[in-house]
Length: 199
Image (cartoon, rainbow, N blue to C red):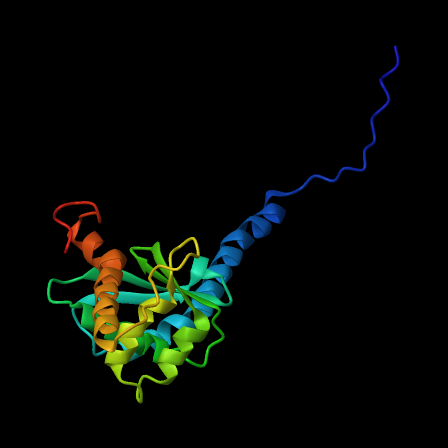
């Protein structure tokens, strides 16, 4: 009886120590990605945070849409205290626009707890930021609704014409409706169809 021929292979045994370094790279890649994502959003978040540092009564944060968009940002209402008014939120939005007036922005998402409520063109957002120090804020908040769209892109409010008194009244009605649909009714926990919704 002859012994079976010994099989010869080219496979070289892989020592466990040779595999570990590759496995250890994954946390480094993930960590590096998170750092890059934070830095990418900080260009938007930090200037707005500084501009709103003196504001109280609410927490609002600006960041890139989906955290990666190069030209779309989100202005998000995270929390609101009972003392916050519509005028206070207007001031926050205008200060954020002023802080980002030199950024390249195509679209601004107005959100509540991360949920898209309205859209605003980036060019208009930059315009109200650039003119914040010189434009009458009453004029801005009266006409701002004409530049706002629903999440599907359709106009959220009308452009009113006629006598200035009647137009002003309709514009202020739209201004109140804008805030109710953006954050007020959700903060109160009611829907627009709820009888408890802010009139």
